[in-house]
Length: 146
Image 1 (cartoon, one colour):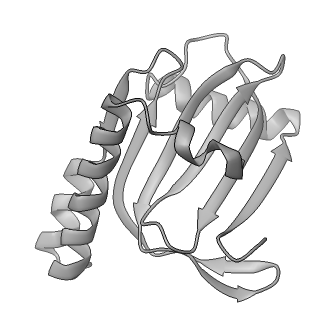
Image 2 (image 1 turned 90 degrees about the vertical axis):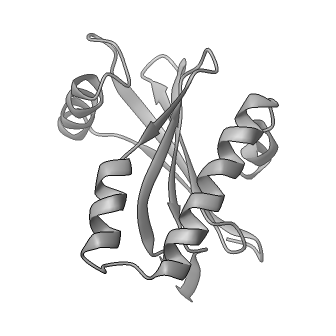
């Protein structure tokens, strides 16, 4: 952890790798037979998203994922809090981008789970990441934090 972010890295035990990989295959984010071996995460203190990097057992990149949310708040040296605003984004290794959970986001707005200000933040962050990905900026601009 430094003044800009909290970074984590985890090599997954087999049971967790199998469950997570199965879920990612179901969502068509990775191909059948691919398995997640490691996850690197960055929680930013001044950005409205986090960045996760998924790698296979052999180290090959499987994809990048971001939860859109309010910037992370340090609670203690070991703990942060990030309010998830429902929208997510997945970037395949070939650069293709997939916007996720618009239905959950719209439902959260209708049920007043998130405020109009939070909804605006989420929409703006999603649009920014889409534009940055198109320009080749996302996720490379944030990779030095991984």
